[in-house]
Structure formats: C-alpha cells, structure tokens
Amino acid sequence: MRDRTRAVGAAVVAALVLYVALPIVVVDAVALGSLRTPVGRASAEHELTTIVVAALWPVLLGTALWFFRRPLLALAGRSTAHADEAATAERLARERAIAATAHLVAAQRALREVDDPAIGLLETQAIRAVGAEGPAPQVPPSEIASLVGSLVTPATVRAFEKRLVLWLDADPTAHLELIRALEALEIRVDTALATEDALVKVELRRYDLLVGDERRAADDRAGLPFTAAVHRRDATIPIVAPSGGPVRLFETLTRQLLAGAPR
Image (cartoon, rainbow, N blue to C red):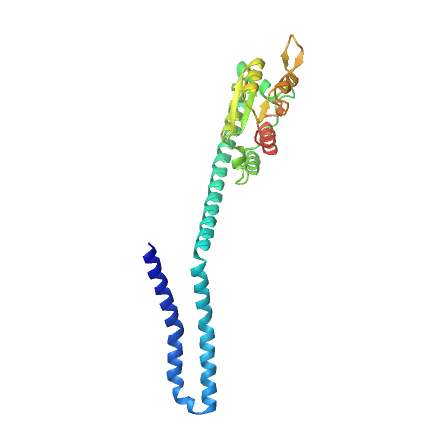
C-alpha cells in the first residue's frame, strides 16, 4: 500500500511538471524567432510569464490537496455521516408520527362509539378516560396529524427514545390507543393497576413521568394523597392527571417529556 501511494505521488508530480514545462517549451519554440529584437524578446518574456503564472496556481492547489488529503477525506467522511444521520432521523420522525397519529385517531373513534348507550362497558371506560370534565371535543384527523408532526420532528425523535412512563389505572385498556401512540415514539410505558403497585415500581425504577389521578388516596389508613406518597419515594418525578381527551393528553405528555431531561 505504501509503495502504491508513493507511485501515485510520483505520477502526480510528473504530471504537474509536464503541465508546467510543456507550455513553456511550446512558447519558447514559437517565440524563438522573435528573440532577435528587443521588442520581440520583451513580448516573448511577457507571454512566458503569463503562461507560468496561469499554470502555477493548479500546481499549488494540487500540492496543497495532496499534503492535506487525510484531514480533507476525514472531513468529507464526517459530512457524509452527518447527512446520513439527518436522513435517518427524518425518516424515523415521519414513520413514527404517522403511527402515533393513527393510534390517536383510533382513540378518538373509540370514544365516539360509546355514544351508543347499549355499550355500557365502553361508556364507563370513556368517562374515566376523559376525566371529570366530560367528553372532549373531537379533533379532526388533519389537526391531529399537524399536532403530532410539530411534536415529532427530526430534532426531537431521538429525545423520546427509551423514556419511561408509569401509567396508573385500574383498567389501562381505557387508554390503550393513547399508550400505543406513545409507544410508537419508542416511549416505554409501564402500567400499574393499583396505587400500591405504582409505588413499588417507583421505588424500583426511575421514571421520567407518571400518569395518574393525583386526587387518588395512596393509603387510606395513613390518609396520604397520591402525589405526596409518590414524592416521598421520588421527589422529582412529574405527575400528570389523565384528563382532557386523548389528543390533548398526548400533547401534554410529550411536551412534558421533551421539557424534562432523561432521568
């Protein structure tokens, strides 16, 4: 490899020498007849100087490129790597945003279907899912896609990866599509069916966010509110109440995760 590099270097130097010397020889031969007079000699020298100057800058440029070839190649490699990484982030953001949007649309559809009073179980789940304020207004799919696209971008797609969320709910299926929307962004969601289960999990893992009703009693005997019980175990974990409808709750949770540093 070293011998090949030397051979290539010698070939480049020889080519540069010919590049400079050949025009000089040609001009010298053409102007040979005019060197007998001072005017002819001055004209030939001027032409020769012009050609040498014009031919010199490629030689200098080629020499500089040869000596600095390694850092230049390394720089080009880093630029290519950055371009590939940016393209990958853009593709991931687009794919994950599409998947999250589909789950949010499905979550809204599930809430809309419980308007039929014959579906008692789903109706109960929907009331618990949207909170005490009553059913949230329906958000058009185009607005959902726009909202998700503004949150899931090439600049933020990596920030959601491997974030940990603990969701406290006696029936997590009430928020199943919303949880799937979060998981589409590579957010890990653990569920807890009871307060005691949630408190144990908070002790075992460091969660970036906890979703649960802060009005829930953590321990009926001690009378501690849920928030206080959680913060006795982890004083820094944010707690969000599951209210406002699936789309707005998704926005609240993702913005909270983006605002907080990974734990």
